[in-house]
Length: 312
Length: 145
Image 1 (cartoon, each protein chain N blue to C red):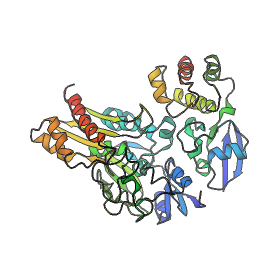
Image 2: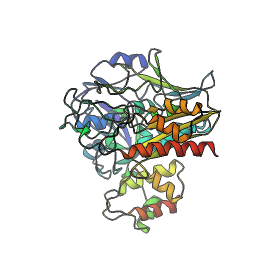
Image 3: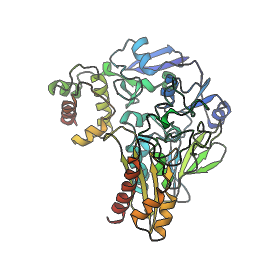
């Protein structure tokens, strides 16, 4: 691991003051420490934001819930307010990682974790996300788990977070130090010709919390399909939440971003069947050589989940 | 950097490079080699220890960020019911993953984990056993739960 200067921030202001370009914020460390050991991340300064007191889950005046960025995945998944009002969030959290990792990883860090594309994690290989302009071996190489929607000639990586998919479906608000906010699913960006940027955040931006809007009225479900029953990233996942006659939908494992299904939602409002809505959402999908199965999987997952939620 | 750590009840005042992980600190500086280095990427669970009573993978923990923490390793157990259950159920073969399995199982039970075999398999999915002793590991944990 490259040498770095370590500092522990005592408060948000000093964290942001130290968090310039070339620095990385350290929270749970479950992704960052691994990437530093692999040589993928080479910060010259690591700012520990683990003791900023951002570890509370509280009700907001507007009827929603505010989650501190430093809350651990396991704590949020088990929190009564989340279990009762936002079950899709708890289900998504428990579908990810392992018991040990969920005790370490934080909510803010979860959203900022990097892709698990094998070329991104291997510094001996080209990768436009890690080394801009070096190329993308995944397009012709190992891409079974990668994107079918919204990818570019520069990058076909997927975002690995389950939580982000649930937050995208719920219109969660990401709160940054200094008062700026970003509405999900707008935190993450498509790769375009600059896949080095996963999100719209600038160097030094620090996530301090997540605000969930007031709970929706209907049932919710996070459903994840993967190669083994536990401790694996999604091939395809779906977060679905019913609100009266409306449905919120987002897909995971299919794109560089948690993929909010605005097209399918609109089609359903217009009276489309579940199958028609899924087909409309996936009409622009461009599967790669070895991941065409994700198209069928995404369609079936959307239809089946909608079916389950509306015939309970 | 200076670091204070309580490990298995003993207080240590240490001076560590910020790159040192909790796992390497335990093994190389404190001589507590019960916690194993398997994958060193947080995927196998062989390095599982308790920090503040909660199970974590020590290979992904920078030691400096655990300043002031209280850590329990396999050396800190004394005739724990899970240890006896592992022996009675023959829940290991080579034994390399066993310290991590035990510490993770303690964490699992502390989290309210039940004796349901499916729940044990899900709750213990962060611990790999290359010998494939899973059936007996599940039985051993189920007996203590």
